Amino acid sequence: MREPELKPQERLDDLMKSGRHIIQDPREFCFSLDAVLLAHFPHYHRRQNVLELGTGTGVIPLLIADEVAHVEAVELSPVMADLASRNVWMNELEQKITVRQGDYRDIRSMYPAESFDLVLANPPYRPVAHGQANKIQGIARARHEFTATLADVVTAARYALRFGGRFAMVHLPERLGEILVSLHAHQMEAKRLQMVQPKAEKAPNMMLVEAVVGAAPGGLKVLPPLIVHEADGGYTEAIRRIYGLTERD
Image 1 (cartoon, rainbow, N blue to C red):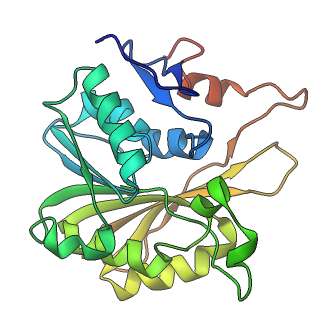
Image 2 (tube, rainbow, N blue to C red):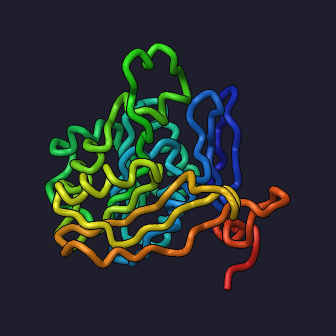
């Protein structure tokens, strides 16, 4: 790992993965559990070319770089794209990860059609209600559809994916119906689904879904729910393994 030069307010976090670290700025949007869960959800192959739509600090490419051939990471914000690029450089992964500043709503100008095996997205979760825009500032904007809607991210994913390619996304359970309809409208069918619950007795507050381009409808595999916290508030064994806090089998 190269020695980073941290700017004011920036911090260096340990990813607990292959000795990698990540620079984050708390004034911007720092990654959270949803990104880590998404990174661990798909099954990867060494020959895969992967695209991430909206990479933020670049955490997902840093976590999956060893498992795939190459990752293209698109980020709209110039500030975040620069931070993601610095993280790639710091971890000496320039040969595995390319960060590109741009708007994936204009993906046709960025990449050839059907040129990726896997697309990942942790998109804004919530639609913007009338009159809401002025009430939401800074970090909260990353969770609302100011710059990209569900339709935008699904459209971009379908354009980028080859026939038989896979699209994995983390989103809200309450939007599952919309997501399934949008995927189907773009020639993709959901094949794997996992709900994420904050505790065993709580309702899911996140979900992970994976769809396949050109697949026949039906055959959705619903995985056992992923429980984040034990009753005492500590992480479950499953989450500790994902975070690298315990030995893997």
